[in-house]
Length: 154
Image (cartoon, rainbow, N blue to C red):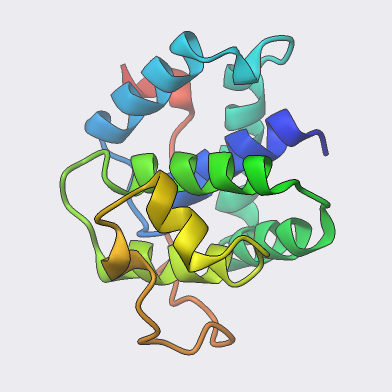
């Protein structure tokens, strides 16, 4: 998996981790993709639709695979901070931060080497996402959800 695909998968997983994909999240994601050079050279829509198929088939296992992939990839501090920023942006996209999203963010955070201080320096006022209030080893709760293809969210 390329780093571009990892960033895109991070965005997707942060959208899907609460079991719902809403229009606001899609709008923010599409704007991020259009405005950022991070995703140049890949086909985001095709990749996202593949992720939709995979999560519909695998459910929570898809999210667990992502977390395992995140543990296995070597990222610089700058790349980790970029990934954290993408995750925060997607969690806040619909202006409704669910505990499942915060919990998933903490699972992402636990797999990164960047410090809380570095995160807060880059993303001030995000202490609530870093507070140690859960066991990051416990599995996310997943209610079976079937998502539609991203091009159908228009």
